[in-house]
Image 1: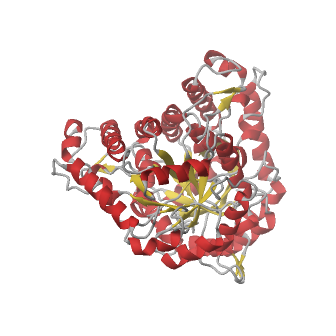
Image 2: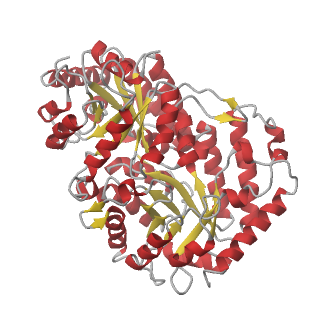
Image 3: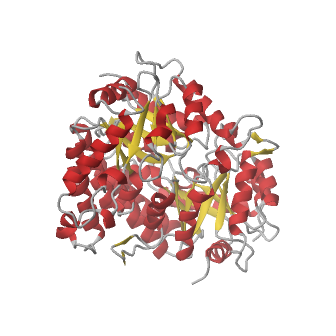
Length: 305
Length: 305
């Protein structure tokens, strides 16, 4: 089996686009025709919402599988539906991998020692109880929050590495208030640069032939200057870039994210693609495909793969 | 209904102890007599593990309900078992509240904008779809990671406040490598002090009659000097203190966590209490109760309630 970075580069090159489709289901934006069996405008139950999410997202995966190489699931929208949402997410992650999509779960988990390992086992390879491993289909990558330090990140990485997976560590996020702590001068360099250096150092000794390691970085598209700066600071780190599309960043903001060969970043867009149609439009699948092609076209202008 | 801080103070005073029992199930440490129906040393399935967790933790809740006022569930150990673990956690949280325990869910969640709201709705009040609220039993508090800044914390707080709940923000964690980022000088004050000031400012205007607000702080017991320092820096903030017991901090390390009246902190201890017995000992319930009383006794020496 290829390593983490090689699979990611291969997924991007095969699809000829750095676009990553964000799977962020929101009940009120799902086409009514999909919601109809589950209550229409007002759902029958939380289980009905979870089921609708599974049907909708499953169809989205089928529609984008030939067009992009990478998808990112936002765990929060499934957790919002309780355990039935969690069960739907498990099945969708399996479907995504079966469709050949490089599959990222965005949960921003973080904890220490064996607690971090518990989270990591749920994503990679399955937990071990009584010396027996309960295999689950591994996903390709998860997102991890760095505030607790390297020793809290390492259990995630260790488990990921055992299954040719990887992690994306939050470095510079895309929200308006991202800089409150991330931009603090500590004491001469901003905090996010300290985090960036930790990420780059974790990749040392683990570079694959494509030139990247298995520790990626989340860097928001909404801050183009920082994005380009971090590309230089982190030559061996693959980026996961949120903020393109609904959050307001344009393709032009992304130019700094890539290496000259067009690799080095996947650009996430969720709502702008999956909810391209108005909820009462029955041709939502066509509109979703058009929105996906439009985003690919925009990115092709700044990323020559 | 009483406010968040008033309920927390009341729970601590009624039990006459700041002890919080950590509900952190680990298959290999659960008494064999409890595991027997689910496969014994090696579990039959992930569902069997989740069921054993539910039985064991449910009994732990019954045993400690008369002894302590507060419990903290570690989400990772339930997530480790997939959706069946998540379903077990949901039922246990309900049981905990029904037993009158102040109930904290430790998931260290973090995200931006409406994604943060999705997480928060799962904990407080239930989600709203199609204008209809799907009520779930609210818990009392969750833990939140601050790396993304105030605008990413606020959706959690807003939802918590709507249901008289609260949040505990990670300020200074208990792990050996906690200082890597948290102790960086930014540029004159350490990062964790900046986070502490954000927490304290979020409480401004929301102080309850007990003198605390609905935004708490996670501060590790393994760093006694910082604990005392933060008590002074954050006079209106209630602390959730991990690190006592299995992680190595002693009661003496905790003296700085409390106000003079003995309030101001709950001290978490998990494994040292719930897994006090060896796995082959049939009197595990007695040993658990003794360990709980022992911890209470130790804490009574540093906290006069």
